[in-house]
Length: 126
Image 1 (tube, rainbow, N blue to C red):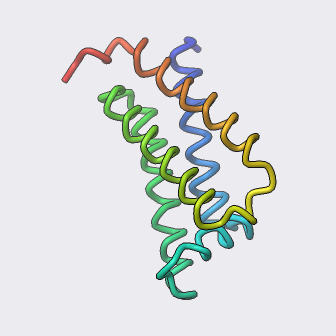
Image 2: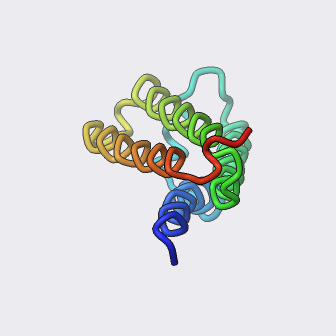
C-alpha cells in the first residue's frame, strides 16, 4: 500500500468513525449533548441534525477515498473541522472535557488533510 493510499484511508476512517459511529449508529451521548446545546434546535431535531451531519461526514470520507479534487476536499474538510470546533466550543463548552486536546488533535488532522491534498498527483487538476 502506498503512503498516499495509507494517508487517504487514515483521513477517511476518521470521517467514517466520527460520522457513522459517533453520530448515526450507535451514536455517542457527548455528540448528542453538544448538538443539543445548539440554539434553535428542538429535541426532536437533534437526532435529525446528528444523522445529517454523520451521513455528510461519511460522504466526505468517501470523497477523500476517491482522490478527486483533493484541494477542494481539503478546503471543505478544513471548513467543517473549524466550524465543528467553533460550534462546540461556543455553544457547548461544558461538554468538551479537554478543549486543548480537541484543538491539538484536530490541528494535526487538518495538517494531514493538507499534506495529502498538496502531495496528491491530482492536486493541480481541475
